[in-house]
Image 1 (cartoon, rainbow, N blue to C red):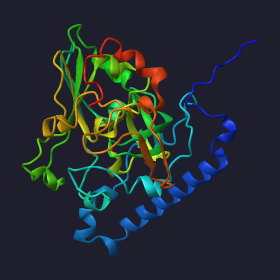
Image 2 (image 1 turned 45 degrees about the vertical axis):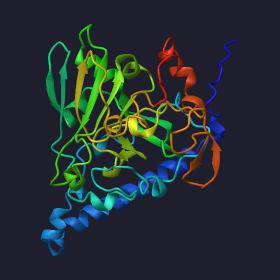
Image 3 (image 1 turned 90 degrees about the horizontal axis):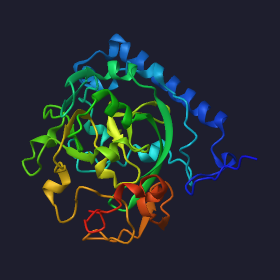
Amino acid sequence: MHIRRRRGWEIPESAATPEAVYLSRREALGAGIGAGAALLASPLLATPAAAQRVSDMPDPSADLYPAKRNDAYALDRPVTPEARSSTLNNYYEFSYGKNVAPSMTRFQRRPWTVKVDGLVEKPFEIGIDDLLKKVSLEERLYRHRCVEAWSMAVPWTGFPMADLVALAAPMASAKYIQMESFVDPKVAPNQRDFRYPWPYVEGLTLEEARNELAFLVTGIYGKPAPNQFGAPLRIALPWKYGFKSAKGIVRFTFTDKQPVSFWEAVQASEYGFWANVNPKVAHPRWSQASEEDIATGNRRPTLLYNGYGEQVAGLYKGLETQKIWY
């Protein structure tokens, strides 16, 4: 008899949201999008102000959603309602508050070009829609833990970062990947703020990038990701604090030097390169022992590696002398 050992962070299928309920919600969303497109097409609304809302333009990849769910990535808690998760986002390029979407009306997700360079066999640039033709999208349920001690649980759609690494064909000397977000102060006004070292930069070791959990995200809740979630391309690293999950990525550089991440450059004593979730290591200004579920307001104990230790703990063996949590 084959006995399957359930991972510590998985739940029984019976505890998941019924598929009929989830799909009916997607259909309702699709109807709303269609109605919105019809209104935008109306000549009565073709005003300069409406034309400026380029974020309302339909996403050309919409037909790729919803993607098939990969049931290997389940949750131990309910999915956070979109109405809540979509109004609590950190995206300093646009707003220092949490409700970012109203500040993103001029943000354009197309055209969008991704550059791959550095220590690779052949550097290249590729449009986001051409990149999507080279990968297979899937949906994964992930926990997300912010360094600010709040958490949510969401259904990301995307593809393993390992697939991008394979496309890049890095040289043997490559040890890290530096991710760089877009720069366009015309649509992201806070990029004029000289206090911050734009563009937003993050980095991973090549081993971390190839880990099964590292996930390049293009969608959420069964549709292309709304802008405030980092469309059209971001990364999800569920075992790390959320600031490691760069949004609006336009460049991946393979390098033999450890990148200096955005928040590390701002305040290295509080935000370091590794940023692995650890309840026993406090942020210099607050505890990380517990977290607030943004859907319920309830607090729960924080889990080491956000509960994904089985998949990632081996990445950090031999690094005990390093400050790998911040």
